[in-house]
Amino acid sequence: MTITILLFAGLAERANVRKIELTLPEQATVRDLLQAVGEQYPALAPLLGSCFVSINHEYAASDRVISPDDEIALLPPVSGGEEVPRFAITREPLSADKLVQLVSNPHAGAVLTFVGTVREFTHGQRTVYLSYEAYEPMAVEKMKQIAAEIEERWPGAQVAMHHRVGDLAVEEIAVVVAVATPHRNESFEAGRYAIERLKQIVPIWKKEIWEDGSEWKGHQQGPWNPLAMSEGKEA
Image 1 (cartoon, rainbow, N blue to C red):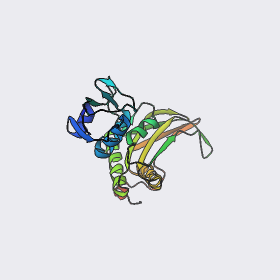
Image 2: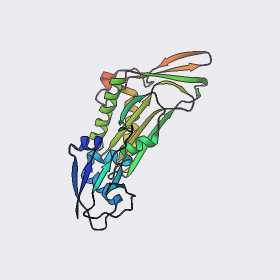
Image 3: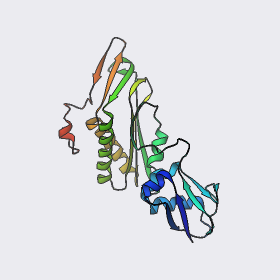
Image 4: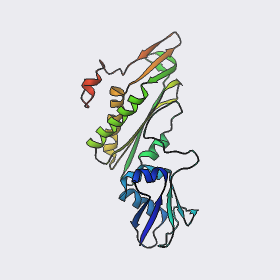
């Protein structure tokens, strides 16, 4: 059966259309519909985890069976729940679950997350808290560059990166990276690449505040030369 699906807000903007058509088998469910949308419209796939389906003006459960004459709409979050960006510098607490939703898609067989937290002791010195600062517009652009590099090296990969700035206490999350790939080995490789490249070229600094002093820290991977690293080459 062929069905028409109405799109709104960020979904319509990303698809560049207000409605799409799908061919589904008889007795297909909402779950089947979402899977088909992700496969046939990859641009929408990263958003589907936070969307709901309505059938005949009612929210539909994932096991709801679809009929050919149903009016179907795909609904993004409303009432201030705007689309979460894949790349962000933020002062708000970070959530790995949110980034998993951003990259999860029907083509992915693995989703790897890296969560960087504030540790208490470094080389025997006790950290009271860390303070992060970023050149925010450039940092986001460099995150996008890293994602493009990953998508070129590992076709089909989806990447999201969020880094927090401001003062962070011990155990708080400073950075989250999520990478979805078709196979698990690729997710491990791409995830490691993502965090290492973030340290190399994204303009973010941290100040370690100790019990008896403080110090700004760089990327701690040898002499910093982002020009030499700009194409993914080691300095």
